[in-house]
Length: 243
Image (tube, rainbow, N blue to C red; front, side):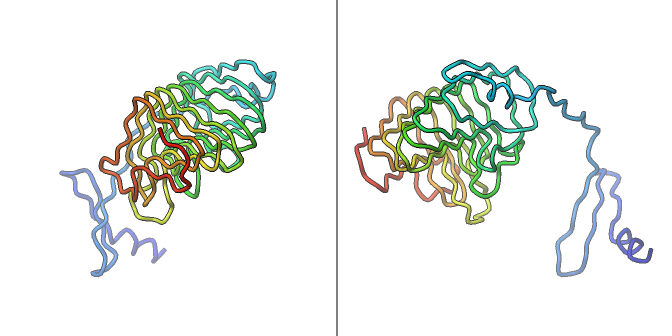
């Protein structure tokens, strides 16, 4: 009881600002606290979108109904997945909001919008999209990925990444935490294509656009550091062909 009394004695209410101000000791700064407003609870869709992916036949098209879902997606077969109006607030396999993991497959993602703050994709090596496998082909169209640790990332076992008409921005955290953040990180794969897209602002000493692919093609796109804290705007550490 005495500890509770001591806690509340440290705070005073400032009615003109509708906040509480508190201080622990003379060595610390002043804390400002404000009660949250009445916020409507998130209405999550009852449908499990992963079940639609699991039940789909390889090579087919899956349309996820618009809505807010409390999970990410794991894709392990050739599919076209339409995501217009879909808000995925979760991470798949602890790797990305969407984790594509398959060999010799072709996956197309359309209208994906991933926000790491809403999805909990802001620590470790969490990516908006993580692509893994041998000789995959992943095409991303009309995507917007923001505030994830990594925007789009692949592994090193060969394959192709195609990014079209998309915006990838604000990867990493503005705190020099040591988590290297890249908006696009193509590993040791066969080819990466960036077309009609914008990639900008990376934090945490990362790179805006990084490619270890043997063949890199950039067409009609913007790659910009902006106000980020990136160590490089463009990085091609393994050489190869750049067009």
